[in-house]
Length: 209
Image (tube, rainbow, N blue to C red; front, top):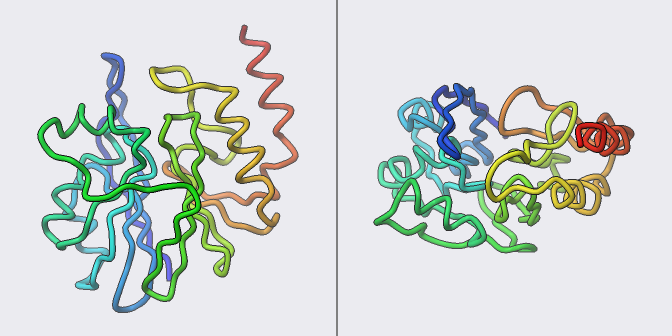
């Protein structure tokens, strides 16, 4: 079972602010869920949880718009907040006096709510970016690594275009074509819809140089 909540707020980095709508994904069953990316306001997320036990608040990366409701949600539900250590510097900018409750690592398997989520380290948009693969469900939660129409942005601090391309090429595109990609912003897509365009994305980036 996958439920979607959308919240709106501000993404801030390198002294610039952007208005954004964020996807929050609730993954589990009728009694237990994982929350993927607690963004902006924990109250709508709590409404979407509908009293179910929250197994963990999983942060796909440390940008403020993906974690700025994580601590409040964790405190409201008693769930641990998990982040890859590669994004700790981004976390500390939002929560300078509070650490995440646990770390995410490549290959880690998060289980509960009849769901098995494998952590795939997919850096590039940020050093500690991760995607979460539910093989049985045919779904991957890509955070800001892969969107409908291309990779996540790499024009700001701690991001790198060749790195995100390699993450997509080696970690996401090998997944079955029918795998549904639930993204951090905007509409979902599939691996099969995006895979043919990898070379186009690379060429477009090179043309910008």
